Structure formats: C-alpha cells, structure tokens
Length: 320
Image (cartoon, rainbow, N blue to C red; front, side):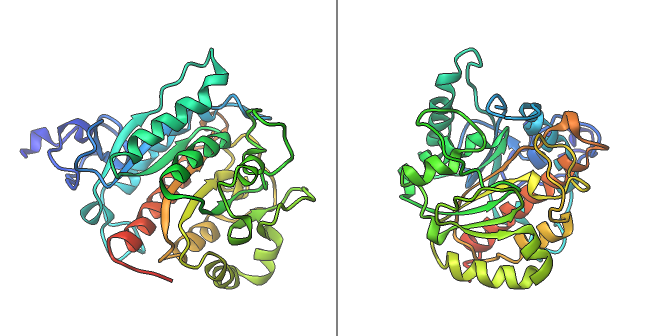
C-alpha cells in the first residue's frame, strides 16, 4: 500500500490482520482501525456497538458509548499493547461489525432485536465483543450466547450487583442478572462479581468480591479466588465501567465512589489469562459525562485486554 493510501483503514485494508499505521487523529473510525465489514467468513471476533440507553435509571448518554470507545481506540491500534508479549491483531482476526439496529419507538422490541443481532454473528462461528450502551443489553446478549453454548459462568465487573428483584419482562439496567439466574442462563455459584459497593441483601448465590475486600486483600488474592471459582467453565465477561472509581471513569450514568483504580482493573483483567471466554461486553461508558475522554480511553484499553484474553485462550491455548 502506498503512503498516500494509508488512511481510512476501516474501509481500505485488504486483510483482517492488516495493521497499517494511520494517524490517531484522522481517518474513518472503526474499533482499533479494524476492517469494517458485515462479512464474517474471515473473522474470528466481531466488535459491535449496541447504542441503547433507555433502560438506565440515572443519567442517560451511553448510546454514545460505542462511538466514544471507537474514537479512543485509535490509541490501542498502532502497536502491540503493553504488557502483552504478543500482537493481538496479527494473531486474531478481528473486525468491526458496526452497530445493532433497533427502533427506539418500539422499546418492547429492543431485547429481541439485540438478541437476533448477536445470534447472526454467532451463527457464523464468530465470537462477539459488544460495546454499550447501558448494562441491560447483557441480558439479550447472554440469551444469544446461551442458545449456542449452554449456561455460562458470569465474570461481572461492576459497582452494582444488578440482581435487584424484578417482574418478568421489565427492561432495566439494574435487574438483568436477576432475570439471567431465573432463566437459567448463568450458574451463580460458579460466577464472580468484582468491585461491588452498593447495597443489595440478596446475593442470588453469586460469589461477590466487594471493592473494599479487594482494597484490603489485594489483586493477587482476588485472582486466586476467581480462578478457583471459574475453573475451565465457559465464561461470559461483562465489564460495567462504573466498577472503576469515578476519579478514573467519570463518564458513566451511575457513578459510585470507592471503586477500583484503572490500574487495578487492568491488572485484574490481565491476571485472568487462560479464562475460557466465549463472549464479552463493555458497557455504561457515557461520553457526555466524561472529562478529556478518559473514560472512553479506559474503555478502549479494557476492550483490548478482553481481546487479548480471548487470544491467549483460543489462539495460544493457555488455561488456568
């Protein structure tokens, strides 16, 4: 490719593994400059946006999350990301599949639209990294994954348990995992919730590591316990950005003080090499409440580390 054509890689690259340098501040946006395509025959992972935020109970704005994360992801596109010793882009065929379409005027149809969107990707034997959007989206996304893989263990980073009791059929970003347990999508006794720091007396059987527990006992103790609980189970990883303290991630709808630092969050993710990931999402990035794009930037780094975890397990064969 000539120097003059090294721009707009989202549309001009000829391979899913192409990593031609492009200025961070220009060019057509796709996640980490990956090929933008609806064709999945040569894709192992599809990154897709789900710009839905009408299930939020506090500040809206996460509908802009996928766009914000994509813009910030130019910072993780140009080199092998530290401290990984392998290059994800040369090992894993990642594409940007674009966003899920739904009719906001028909909110009752949104869960089905999201589930169908994910099912189409999974039907091509392509894994999915979903970018939210509010956390409700995890429920229809989980339904699609369980339809393919069967019940999974949930690896859940959040300030909230999102298991508040709810009536069937409600659309709420604080009750998805109540429904997920009731529907048999996840096995709570083999699942882990990390960073929790809000009151909910009903654990529904989840293994919960509160933020204060992590601050007291440390990341290494958390990693040891988490590995034992997850074992070699099929794992769905969901990361609500409000798991991180608002000092590091102000751009979110329901911030809670006392959370993890960005360094702790990234160290925990990177310490879970070998986890048997079958699906992933990053949710609740709300650019309207961000400052200097630091939340979107953290989201991009978290998303990259999710892809690196997937690579370590499914391309390098690593296990716990």
